[in-house]
Length: 87
Image (cartoon, rainbow, N blue to C red):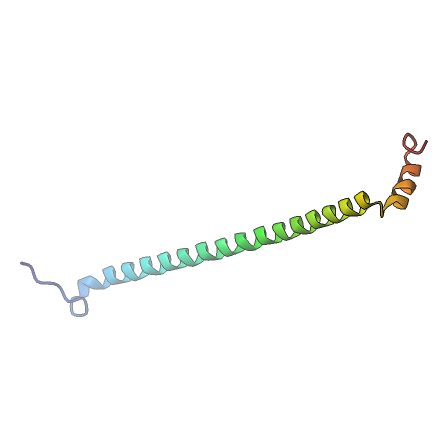
């Protein structure tokens, strides 16, 4: 069996320690970048969905107003601006 080399005593092990430490730092920064990218993507999707919900709610509200007859006066005024519907 071979003996383990003590890195603190052996000067030949110093470059290997530096390379290993650099690799760990690179890996850690890569993971942090990935987490930040995922967070930004989730925020962008949430913003998009927020506006979609507002638009759907507005459309449903307009539908109920028009189907109940509440917007009849508005519809008559809108028809007067369109020549082929105002007759």
